[in-house]
Amino acid sequence: MVEKLKNTALVFLGLLMVVLLFFNLTLGLDDGYFQAVRQTFGIGSSSVTPGSQVSGSTVLPAKLAVRGDLGLYMACGSVMTEMYYRAGPLLTEALGSVGTIEEWNERDFCLSLSGSCVYFSFSFPVDLGMLEYWHTGIMGSSSDYSVSLLALFSGDDGDVDIGFYDGNTGRCYLAQTAAGTERLAEVCTEVRSANACFAFEKEEFHNLLPYEAVFTESVYFPVYAVTVPDFSSESENGEKLISFFGMNPYLAKTYKTIQGDTVYVESFSALQVSKGGRVLYSGTDGIQLDIPDGLSEKQTEAVSAELAGEFLSSVCMGLSCHDGLSVADITKEKDGYTISFERQATCAFLTRQDGYSAVVRIRNGAITEVKLWLCNFSETGSCMILPAELAAATLDGMGNMLTVRYSEQNGVLTPMLWSAEGGIADGVE
Image 1 (cartoon, one colour):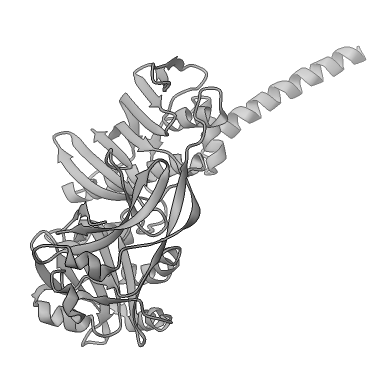
Image 2 (image 1 turned 90 degrees about the vertical axis):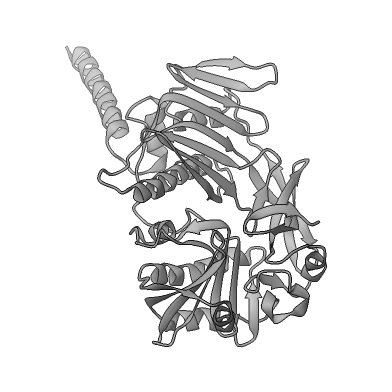
């Protein structure tokens, strides 16, 4: 009798453990590990919801500079992250209180850059309304303008003003904000040295945009080695990867291509992974995006880009791969969007021979196609970039832009100066 009671108790405890495990997997736990476990067992729906905090990381700046009493300092290397951490909140505060926008003349814009200011430059003209949303969570009424570069400085009314250049129209604009100058002064007083200037301040940069920030001394950027984790079907990373795309590793069929790629197929979804870290996904139902109802077309576009970026970041971070993805292009299509992303290696974006680091296609509110490059970077040394004076001397025409970008070759990322005329274009080194 005693043995029967013991056996009954053991059975009961076993069933209780199963029930508790089921609830642990199905309840809405926020922890990423449990979320991955739920996806592994195919429990719950594949969807992406907007983040609870707005970080402004949907689109990252290509350049960041601060002018203080000692001159203009432009970020390079790991300083980029530190400066963005300090200057980002000021940009968010200003974008959250943009007032009337008026056209501005080039001379006054340059004059404002001669004093204390914080400067941001982007690799493509960014819709101002979307920039406001990505930083504040509120879509402004400024979508008639785009921002290629902007500066924050003290205005005549004692608050922070925004001066910006629209690369689509070739015009400058001024916007008053309600942001206080205390944070601006705090950021600018932290500048301890100068390594850059604006193009209008030196004759040798006459063929650049006058408000283009350029280095005035020898600058070294990190060199990175690229490594790719093992995503084979036998690896732990392989199982994690397919679970992020809403597929069950125990139900998906696995194939090998002639090139050695691993292909997973489940129902109407397919995922292909190469040894070089290239991921290709397609799914009829796709990965649902929780896009709120009642949004305007511009709001839907901004939210779609934000959610696509959050999904890609969750995949990268969940697999311990380099993130740093930033929106580079949004193409509106009949039933959705194609959103392209470029990747930043600490302080500069990558230029890849096969295009962007990630491309997401959204159809009817769901991610139906993804192209993603998964990898890791490790710093192996540093390299001096071509002096800006020499680079500018090789350029034709007027209104050029110079920026540092990374070029990938044989698993190594090397920094070099790239020229542009309103956007990223041909290399000069």
